[in-house]
Length: 308
Image (cartoon, rainbow, N blue to C red; front, side):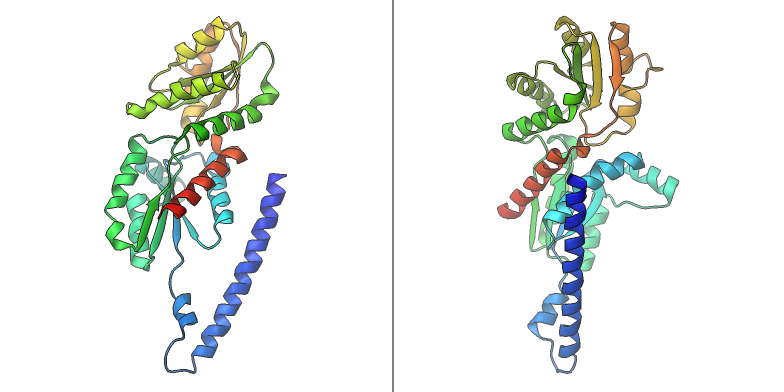
């Protein structure tokens, strides 16, 4: 149902955009006969304010489209007065996409430099990062270098910025995964993990799931704590014999396909759980594919706009 509603909104926005464009063209023709530009034509020459959606990125094109692309699409539909742009923070991924497809995706500084050159006056930056780790904070710090070049700048908070956000994410994931649940099955979510202090959010999320009564949900991380072994042990002690794994990441890219689901890798999450006797199934879907989670990013953009 969401897709059909989205399509209708896109057609409506396209029609409104075409009408606005035609009206602007008529106004421009009318003012051409005068010696000075009218206020309407001067306004038409001013670039639209921009929402820059900043993601770590992924080289998996199919996941990129249905996760990052879906978030960007929902933001675009919610804020039709803004131009929505994309930037990635991983230069490795940017270079990989450029090499494979010939398509260039701007990094944050490139995107911001273009906005300066275009004469954009207002920029809202919305990262799609889950938490205020190193990547998010790098974006926030870099934005400070551009504040004097725009009339207005603002940055939205990450996905799991508040207890309210965390509970909303947990409920959205629960709804998305209910079809896999039964009394024997643990739902195991794999996050990335970070050396930053914000890694504690994974432990917080485990408590949120438990507090909501979702005691069959377990969180692990690739590069920090809780580990794959921690989640496996907890699920086993709780009496579960089957496990469904899903990435607790915006995209389902390299980590999801390899560190989580690759049973040929003895250190993958799936292999660790199989070794402990679990019947394992992997769901290769990012959080960005859950409509309710995309709407949280939309709300964070709105808050960033309201805060300026």
